[in-house]
Image (cartoon, rainbow, N blue to C red; front, side):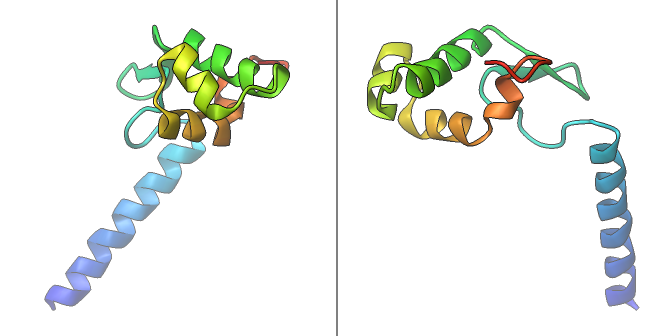
Length: 95
């Protein structure tokens, strides 16, 4: 009986998560350069630094280490930013 209830609660939670994601709501910790308004991602004071770091790596061919030193963003964080560049682009897809 307990196992069935546990599975039911798990499925309900997963379904709620899918519905929220489909509605464009952010689940979990906000990425670097973003905060939330309790549901949706909104750029914060670090957003510009993240975009500058992306530009430095992509357009100036800087290494992640060099971009990290110049922007003050930790290397691992910068690597995560570069993996999700689409979050930092504007509506036309430009950084």
